Image 1: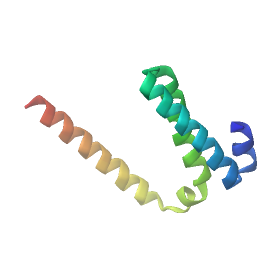
Image 2: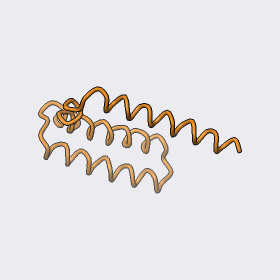
Image 3: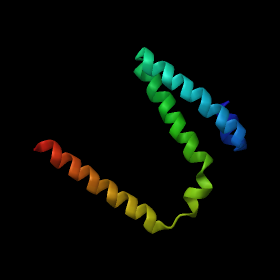
Length: 84
């Protein structure tokens, strides 16, 4: 099912995959199965990014640079707040 969603790129296949992964994620989180939480979480994010790749490819380079800069500033601020 995962390969079918990635190969065809159909929205319906992607939504089915996301629903299955979300149900596994919730089940594993309740049962405290950390391995399955990680696997399903990574698959959810990967499928979502792949299905929206046309949007991400249409953004300019400076948007990515801005996002990376903001991420680094937030990371540094969080680390400084943790020290105090």
